[in-house]
Length: 454
Image (cartoon, rainbow, N blue to C red; front, side, top):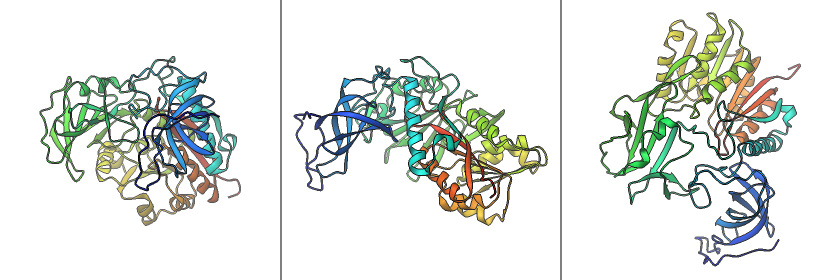
């Protein structure tokens, strides 16, 4: 391929290797990679290109890298030969040098799911050494209920939005990709209606570094969590809807300013208290979608025992206990003390009946100390890094007839599936869900069983 160079002056990197930032190359775009970009090559060097699609011919402008870098990062700033899945980005803040929140605004909804299929297929092959068929996966990424919209329309799904505040103007916005720079926005299209109606973007936030807006699903609860600048004072918060206000201090501690310090979420036929900005799935359909996939896969039986690991505020533990009957039991383990308090509140009826117990601690340290040597079912929903070899080995030794692994990162899932294979467990079904439209993220639920004869 021929190359085109920009007139942007090179900058010298700290390593004294000439910076290539601003250089432009004409490249043919290769396959999608995990992380919201595609792979291209120029004169033998790999470029990770955002805002491109496989098969396109683009002008890629380097955004990060030097003459000695193993690879370069770049944006597609001009499309010479578009892919059929390309559309005009509905969001005016999506594109090179703009908001870094969405990866695939320029792709049809079906095209986005195909990209995610390709990523999961590649991670399973590279890190787990298995095909989709061997994983029990039908090769699809399922849209969330209500999200199957025509090209050009954007589902407003994000019930929690973290806004950064421009220190010069005090206006709320979103950060550029891999940058601390703030892009002021008038509206985030993927923000849920309950977030949009607060009007965060329409007011100024002096002496505030960030604003998290939370709109609960299934209740009218709205909350904002403020992080002041060092030494900054909190403003009087007057938004377009009634809202609770919390602040985070310099040590990461939460403090109630006004209203409740929690929001009430609704899923699995229960109301869930989630305090201090704690973890909850951010797509309104996520919680029920994942609970249904886990229960369908595990097929719980009356009287069985189960573990819910990395249990958060108790979502899977509660859903499991309801299916295991009065003689079944679930132990949940969670490292966040506040989440454990919430889980115990949320499941107080089941705890009172001794059908659920929630303990605080890190799974890899606490689980071996419980003395549990066997169980029937396991659910694990680990953080993005995955569970890891030692935890997987311990879980496999408990002899569960089925294990449900909920994963938000396909690479971590594939690595842990390889560890499970070494320990004698194999996936029998795998489902993938597009619960983060317009981004490269998605969720998976894998159901594992012991290999025959083990």
